[in-house]
Length: 496
Image (cartoon, rainbow, N blue to C red):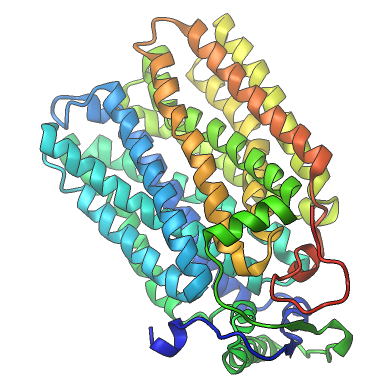
C-alpha cells in the first residue's frame, strides 16, 4: 500500500457522483461472476474449516491421534470462533479505513498461515495444546476479517436488483465448503493413517485459498468506498473498468439520469466510537434487529453443527471414521436452501422471507427434538430431519449477514458487520461447549432434548423480531437504504 492510498481523505469540497447509480444499472456480466468466485470463497473456506473440525473431532479423541477429551475437542471450535471475533473487529476497522481490496488480500494470507500451521500440532501436552489453539485462533482471525471486508465489497459492487440473492447465495456456499471438507475427511480418515489424515484435512483449505489468490488481486477496489473517501479519480477509473468489462460481454449501457447523483463531502475515517454513536443514536432499531438475527442463527449453528458428529457417535453409535459421510446430506440441504430460495428475498421481500425462514426452521427443530427424545430416530432419519430444517435455516442465517451488510452507512459498513458478527460469535461460542456438556457420553438424551428446544426457541425469536422491525431493502440502492454519513442532502436521512 502506498502512503497515498492509505492516508485518510481530507475534509474538503463536495463531490457529486453518479457511481452508485452506474453500478445499479448494470445487468449480470462476467465481471460479477469473477467477483463472486474470487470473494465468495471466504464462505467456502469457513465451511471447510468448521466441517473438518467437526468431522475430525471424534477422531482426535483417539490415542493414536491427539487423545483429546470431548471438552478439549469442543474448545477447538470455541477458540476458532473467538479468533473470528478478533479478526472481524481488527480487520473490519482497517477495511473501512484502508479499503476493501487491501484487506481481502491480507485476511486470506492470515487464514492460509494459521491453517497450515494447525497440521503441525505434535501432541496433547500443554505446549502442544497451546500451539493447536493458537493456530486455530489465527485461522479464525483470517476468516473473521474476510467476513467484514468481503461482505462490504460484494454489496458495494453488486447491482441492487441482484444484491439479495447474491449475498444469500454466496453466504450459502459455506456449505459447498462443508461438502468438500466432508468428502475430503471421509476419504482421508478411511484410507490413510488417522494421525496423518486429520493433518492433511486441515491443508485442504490452504490449497483452495492459493488457487483464488491471484483472482482476488485483479479485482478493482470498491468504487463506492473510493468516492466516499474523496478518491474521485480512482473511483472513476474503477467504475470505468467495470463498465468496460460489462460492455465486452455485449451489453449496451444506457445513460444515467443526473437526478440519481449523490453529493458527498469526504471526511476522515470513522472508528468504533463513531460507529457506536451511529448505531445508538441513528439506527437503534436496526442495531437491535442485526444483533438479534446474528445471535440467534450463530447460536443455533455453532451449537448443533460443531457437535453433530458427537451426537452420531455417542447416541447412534456411528463409527468415528464414518461420521463425515452423514454430513454430506446435511450440507447439501444447507447449500440448496440459499441457492433455491435466494431470489425470493429480492421478489417476495426481505421481511417476509427472513421472518418465515427463521420461524419455520425453529418450529421444525422443535418437532425433531421431540422425535429425538421419543427415541424414534436413527442416524439416517436424524440426518434427514436436519436436511429439511436447515434447508430453511441456512437461507435465514445467510439473510442475517445480508441484513447487517446493507442497512448501515458505507463509511462504517465493515465495522458494523464486524461488531455484530463478533457479538454473534461470542454468544455462538457458548454453544459447542454447552452442547458438548449436554451430549456427554450419550447417557442422557433428555438433556440434549432441552438443548434442542432452546435452539428452536432462539430461532423463532429471531423471526418474530424481523417481522416487527425488519427493513424492506429489496431492490433499493444502498444509499437509499442507509444514507452515507458524508452525504450532503436535503432529503431526510435514513434512520431506524
